[in-house]
Image (cartoon, rainbow, N blue to C red; front, side, top):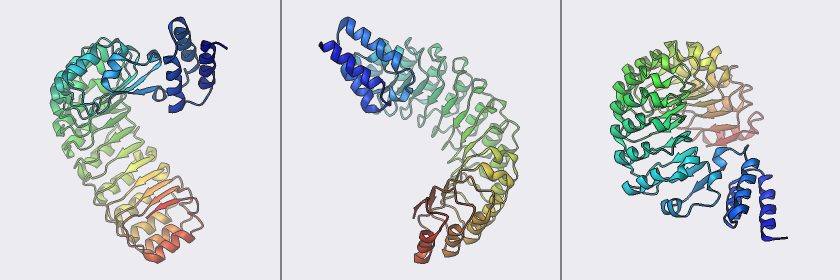
Length: 406
């Protein structure tokens, strides 16, 4: 058997295995040993046989100098490139932007590099981004000027995911992004921690580029009730199924506005931790028909007490909930008793109740509940269950398959 025959035999074995990081890098290593026509045939053979592999499995992590000077010979097969935290600055990002190796990349992660607005301008002007579907530029200090450069780039028309968390984009940068004719294919937009405030939320209200959006992350942006009302009034958010607003003080009035919106009926994942929401807000949520489509609900670190929980779990709309996060609130035994007695939580698989005011009576109610048998994860850190509570959980015939953290 010739050397090339051995290489092809190695490729054949790997392409028929499950796509793992190990098998992927072994494929690349074998291709690095091949030359000329055999290499071209090897690349084409692998390409034909890994079409079903997820893009994430065809990833490559490397230092910047390796990417620029000595990329693997199997580069045309790579779809995801991680250059995260590589301390890439001006000349480095300009070199990346000029590299034709980008032309085959679908997912590019450049987060945490301090690229700045000039670096993003260079990247946005690259003619090799036409195949890019996902771009992560979080933690790069791009500011509103960098956001404008992305918004003005004709090379990002196929982009479906854009992550720009913690960049100081502000309301001005947000306005440019959501009005860009080049970003109309976006389905996921992450703007966490960008100080966009209510003005940025108002820009989103009129964002014509958001029509295809299914996931919107606006956590930690100083959005208040007025901003929530603006989001609720946006017809461009009608396709959003994941809405993340944690860390914004929208309060009960802001939540009520969202629940009255005619455009937010598609939400299935709602994250509203640390949003100044109390029992009144939960009452509005319980009465909203929108609750029926929500499967993941996060309400950590709010001002929710027993009455709010009682109202929520008694709602006939809560039957689709599979994940409920209520840690860091003011919930006591009475609220937990109501939760345990609710016949509407039979789909619940994850329940997080850490750092509340739950004592033995509440723990006993959870342990004895006939309605929580689908639970796979129960989190109870920092409560007041005592040894009796621990024993009740351990003896529960309904929680035997549930992982309990306490």
